[in-house]
Image 1 (cartoon, helix red, strand yellow):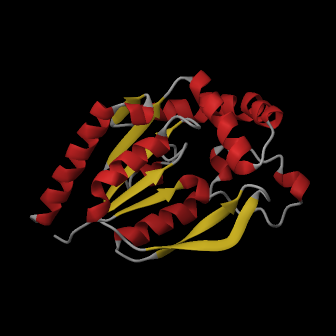
Image 2 (image 1 turned 90 degrees about the horizontal axis):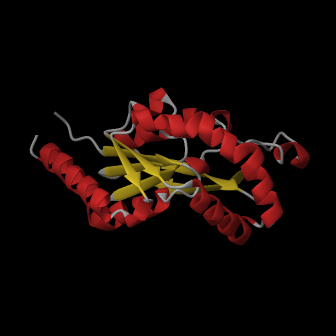
Image 3 (image 1 turned 30 degrees about the horizontal axis):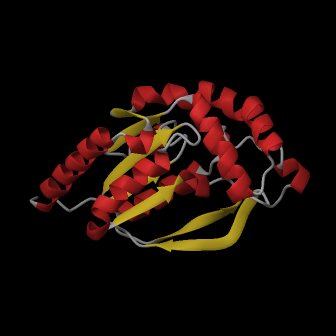
Length: 211
């Protein structure tokens, strides 16, 4: 039987701590080759739309993502083929002309708010995690991030949260908990859960190595 990369899906609400969990796992396995594929790099291209139309995009709805391309890239990485990961421009609200060359690795972490929503995407995963963090902490983190990294105003972030982020979380993201193998409360601060995941990943890698 040929060796196959381990695919880990890490889902959770906006600013729940998914990136912290991803980084904690990455730091353990980086010497064994880990690649991170962020779902929010795979927002659909909107270059055919006016800027005003792009501003109305609901980025927390499943239809905002190009999951077809994401699944294609994961399958290519599973076959140990490199991919060109897209880059999203959050200022222009469309896909950038830039891409990121990604080499295949033994561990593939797929991270994003809705990575557990798509059945075809879930079927590629060996381990499915859901990072569960209180909504008040998530909104504070989102305001700080979007102002600092995405050029937003506090008022626009709050309006988006109330009109799109919160209802979409309740409708689409929260229900994907039922697909998770493990629910991690408090994200990157939950060292016990992260240690358990690291042990499980090591076991899978060692089993594959002995096949």
